[in-house]
Image 1 (cartoon, rainbow, N blue to C red):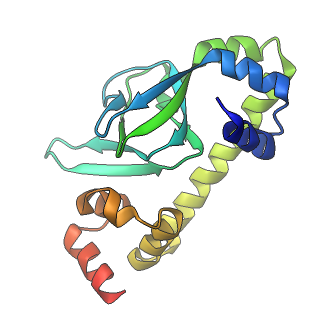
Image 2: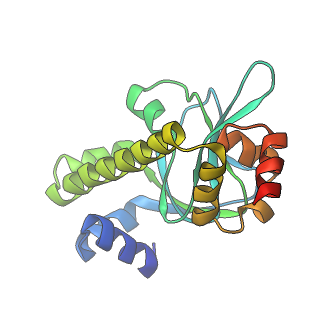
Length: 189
């Protein structure tokens, strides 16, 4: 992990240089090609990722073949089948690179093991959980209170060139609209 990652962790989670070095030693870099998964739906992984470049999504495929995108992950952020890891169950979602991406993977069991003896890592874990909760709650409130056009505008603000990066059906799935509805929204804007 390099300086921009340290700067992010320091500013968001008050990570010291010493704690960062512990994380750096735990992490391994993984370069993902477009379409590559870190966890498949129904699969298991004990690793969490720290997305430093690219875009990823969490999605499920219904029996009908329809894909539903639950989340789109942007740098700098956390990605992985966290519920699956915590419950030691198969993942309900697939975690896929939407474009070429780079993540730092950390073995979650090793991270937890260290957090039991290192107060700084334990505190970091608590702050990450708080951060992930706030991000999740914000997204949930947006999906409940904003109409499709407003959700699209929020997405465009987060990822200005999203329309040029991923297929329309993936954007529509994330916004919970049909590709036809998305096309209408774009036309109106």
